[in-house]
Image 1 (cartoon, rainbow over the protein chains, first blue to last red):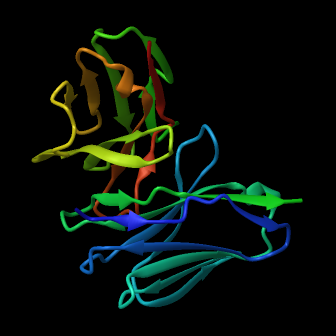
Image 2 (cartoon, each protein chain N blue to C red):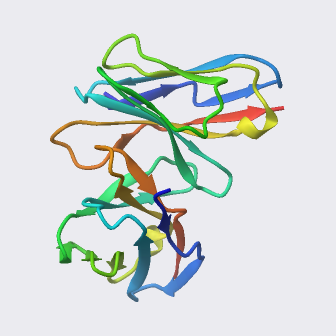
Length: 111
Length: 112
């Protein structure tokens, strides 16, 4: 059974701080990694994708991937109250385009 | 135009009833999915379907059945609804050249 794990939180950070969200996965053959943001009562929306080891930056978001450690993280710089949401890590399974989601980490950015 | 649309948005029904949730995507994607999100926000895949292959998560009860009249539609039919079926059901789609999924807005099913 392929597994994706995240700390459920809540993770609370003050406005302007860096929020660090972590995700580990069990399938060493995984190739694609995504971070989704889900506001309460809304559907998940894709915010970052990463495929290679290292860092990938997009605005205030940085995704970090370490395949040897089976670890992917999301850093949010200059956190804003509007970043308060649940962040879902998704990892591709070995059967095509299907993804396994982690349980999500609830982030709360305090004004 | 909404890329992935689901209807209804809310569904309240009694135990034992049969209900359907509809999903349509206008993105030209070739694979569609149904996910169930429980009260703890855990998203679990139920089905994935493209023109050629239906993949069923073996943990899904056979009371749940996907029906795809064409490439742009994947409906979910549920027989003999149970209290534990209460959840938010998300439809999603993806294409060969796209990144990740595009999700529908979800259907909140409440079984009473």
